[in-house]
Length: 304
Ligand SMILES: [Zn+2]
Image (cartoon, rainbow, N blue to C red):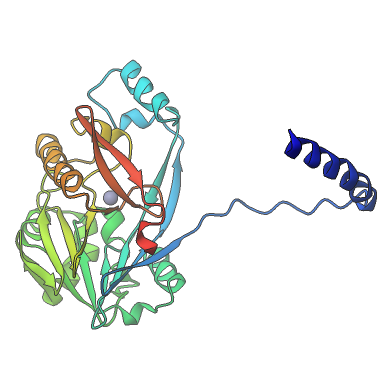
């Protein structure tokens, strides 16, 4: 009661002179919408930076991509419950930089050399500073920044990718692979599940999205985080319902099995992850909910 009275009195007293002091045409021009595009934090001795290389609004029915094997009503119910629309959705493309102190490692390269170069520079580095590029898999939105005008975008980098991934794409006549990956083959190291890409960076197989799709566990001291790449492509539709089919999953059953397996591990270990297509800054936790999972965006945990 006392507080209310006091506040009302202050308000009444302040309102008149403030309003009188405002010029009639004081409206400032509106700015463009603004989106943060760099997020950096420490994970033990590792410095981790997520980079928003691009974000795009998909004006088409998202169910042509996500939840292809469920009816429209179910899709709408799940979306409504999560406060997201069903006639449009937003895509995010988020490569990750890891500075180990000895090595500057880039996970994936976005859709174009212009995007990834600008993103790396926004984080305070030059493309020439990157000494290792890890390719989680070889879809266009991950390999699109590798080559720039016929030359490697990352002039000083060596490359790491899964043997199974390279072999699968090399066996096809794929334009993106031939233009961006094949020219770098001599600089590539090929690894299998459980191998170390660099000290503290270990491959964890998550096949299905593509034949050799790899996630990577970062470890430093007591801290761990999974660079989950395209294990789950949407923070609601792919987590709440890991079995919902996603158009970009090449082997849909294997992709769903990998989701259940690795999301279950993340939930059990309470380990954070970075998802390439999660809403920026793309860092969060996974908890079990019902028969599926739920995305818990990082708030300030990584600042501590
Ligand atoms: Zn992708």
